[in-house]
Amino acid sequence: AYNEVANLEPLFTELRAALLAAGRTWELIVVDDGSTDGTAAALDAEAGRDPRVVPLVLERNAGQSAALAAGLSRVRGDIVVTLDADLQNDPADLPKLLGALANADVVSGIRAKRNDSWLRRASSRIANGVRRAVLGDPVTDIGCSFKAYRRESLEGLPMFVGVHRFLPALCVFRGARFAEVELNHRARRHGVSKYGVGNRLWRGLADLNGVLWLRSRLVRYFTKYNPAKIESAITKKTAAIMP
Image (tube, rainbow, N blue to C red):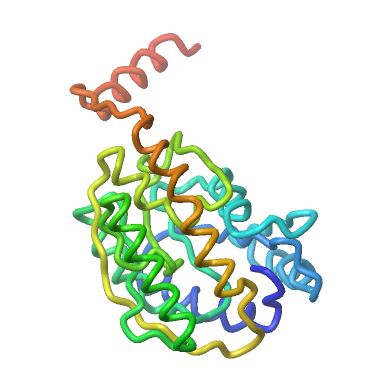
């Protein structure tokens, strides 16, 4: 959330309804990326009403990648869902993402009917096309922030400026199972986009060389043992030595 105070109340209302429909326990980590409009105070007030809301306030605006990295460093759940606070993605689509995760490790949303300007749509189409051609990754719409991950697919991934554009691809490069689902996309209700079209396009293209190098250097390995059996053995051994 970066200067999204007007969107927070409806965001919390819609997210609670979606989480209730999903039927899961949850925590909501909201990263305030150095807002100056009262977002931090609104988050503190919401956390006072509901301890499942966890504000994480950055001391100054650090950008999408830094905010994402800060949030991921504090997650505790087995499933991690990312979402911008601008309400353009519809929280009601959450069960759809989680359903697709049943047979995948990473699920990325596709904004089926984008409510953005033609320039923003065109720049995204170009950037997505170039990225896929260069990296060979399967992600159709990297700009859609609404994504779901199994936590283990994210563990150990390097964080860098621009990582928010490449996170699903990096998971796939390490062997994660990947799926996509079409999601609803809405026009902004309040505020304006914080990231310019040129910034999105040229910085995204410039990051490709670095990610190409990183893809060639990522560590990949697969274990043969059953983690559940190992955990059970450790639990029994611990119980045996406890007084």
